[in-house]
Length: 81
Image (cartoon, rainbow, N blue to C red; front, side, top):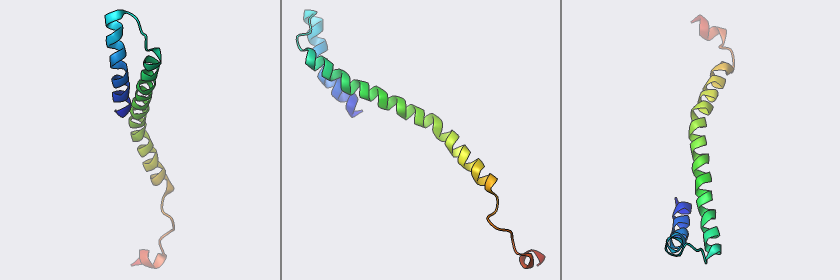
């Protein structure tokens, strides 16, 4: 969210100036504005991927837990009672 705001803040003036003059005199600012925006897109993509994989990982942990079984066999005296 911070990256997106920084990209919009830097890029807004460049876009307004381009719309008025059809020229980008501040190219370094335009390039600088793309960096935070690209980072925002990457972070959003990674967050989406994590949300999709979380249930699968949780299910794999449950299956592994159930497959492990008991750690030790119960004693016969406890079972006979």
